[in-house]
Length: 181
Image (cartoon, rainbow, N blue to C red):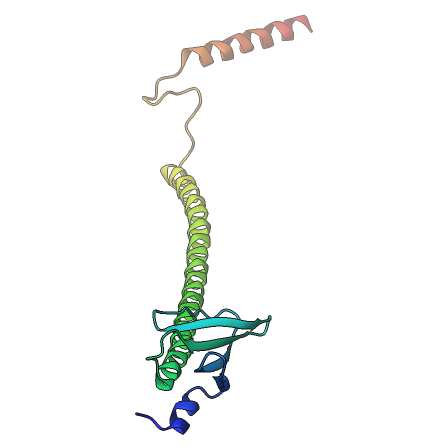
C-alpha cells in the first residue's frame, strides 16, 4: 500500500479536493480534467461531472458500495488520468505518422512530377531527333557532288517520250515564229 503522499503525487495537477461527505457517510475525490477526456462509472465507483467549461471538467469520484476504500477511489482517479494520457500519446503518435506520411506523399508527388516533366520533355525531343534523323537519311541517299538526274531520262537512262514530244513541239513553234517574223 502506498503512502498518502505517493498516491497524491500521482494525481498532481489533477487532484482538486479530497473530502468526507458527512451526509452520505463516505469520502469523495474531485479531480479536474481536460474537456475531451473520457471516463465512466463501474459497479463499485460512481463518477459525476460537477462543473464543465471550455477549459475542462470537474468530476466527483465516490463509492457506490460501503466496501470501497479510499485507495480504491484514488486508484480509479489514477486510472482515469493514465488512460486518458495514454490515449493522448496514441493520438500524438497517429498525428506524427500522418504528418510523416503526408510529407512522404508530397516528396513522392514532387519526384513523380519531375519524372513526368522529364519524360514529356524527352519524348518531344525524341520526336525532334527522329524527324532530324529522317531528314538526314533522305539527304544521305543523295550523295553530294553527284549530278542530279536529268528529268528527260528515266531510271534506266531511256529518254522519256512525253518530254521529248514537248521539246519537239517547242522547236517547231520556234521555227514557225522565225518564218513569220
